[in-house]
Length: 423
Ligand SMILES: Nc1nc2c(ncn2[C@@H]2O[C@H](COP(=O)(O)OP(=O)(O)OP(=O)(O)O)[C@@H](O)[C@H]2O)c(=O)[nH]1
Ligand SMILES: [Mg+2]
Image 1 (cartoon, protein in one colour):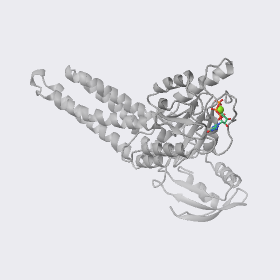
Image 2 (image 1 turned 60 degrees about the vertical axis):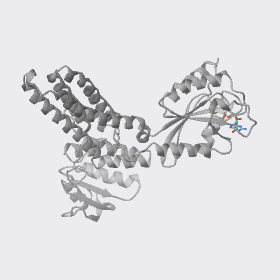
Image 3 (image 1 turned 45 degrees about the vertical axis):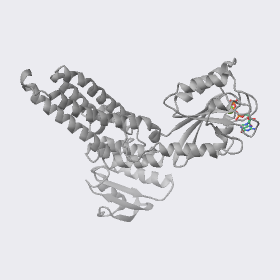
Image 4 (image 1 turned 120 degrees about the vertical axis):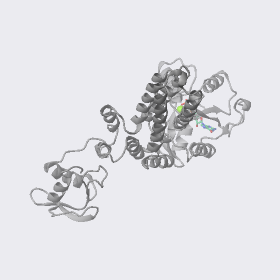
């Protein structure tokens, strides 16, 4: 419970005269008819030293949902109401306890898909992203103040090297924003969980690979080409990462309408993933369809592609030169060679000391600010200093939206509604 009446309600429920802040008190909980519901631990956090910066009371009751529900009912009868999703964190923000970058880190922490993600988010929680953004803002303010002095001068009185001086400052800032943006985009999968799609011609062993990775027979495997008709998504743990893996329908020139739809979903799956397992059959001669798959993969510049030559227990007929350095597997028996390479890639995708952004909202804000800064060079060159100052102010506005937005309600509503209930 959080809010001005939280403490009073807790006293009524426990029939206590007082609760010592930050002390775990063992207490019975009573209903309105004076019957005991449970014996539980009550902890009172006195404002402002709590998660929300308001009076907060926590109950640690016995397990199971029933006891908790009974206590909840009594709390509601005494005047409390059920919190909205993310309301505790929203109050923490509104009460100035945390900024938005920290609130987002809390949300992402709950959903984190890897140990490395947790480490990065805990840095955000310690305020590292906030400091980064505030430094950028201070540098922009410095340039603006510089400009404002310049605006007051007549053109001919301006120092000769004013352009270079502004350029130097601007360049430093542009570079650091570009860097954090690049890091964040490249390693997006780190926070949201990497997505891997398995693609290849029919019958190469894609579903066999999925099943082997999951260690149970999730997908139907058969020697009939075109067995998998629709994409199948599952989560697996690779080292300290939870990744989503998508088995797809084999790609070929299909006549069947349903198979065609399945195949277009296979291409979509590749487009939506960070990593591709491209599988070929060692026991067959490479043909036109294999080549077409290569052509398609060549265009997927931003994906990490693992080439796999499957069925290496059978005599080789596939032209190995086509996929030099492919991982050779027998999916029915052992996929460890692939898992090792994947694990290496996943852990290598995280560089400890590089700060990154944690949400598309933050990426959007930095991209907007960066665009404005890039446009500003031209303005300095043309001595359009007023417009230049305006641009920089706009950039500050975008950066501020990451930590403390100027126009709050819209951003806040959309952001906190993504939280899970009770946080
Ligand atoms: N010898 C051998 N057979 C394999 C291997 N991997 C899969 N197979 C067999 O190849 C056949 C096709 O396997 P699937 O996993 O269904 O192939 P798929 O790529 O999912 O095929 P579609 O769903 O039709 O696209 C099955 O009979 C598997 O048992 C392997 O490494 N060695
Ligand atoms: Mg299949």
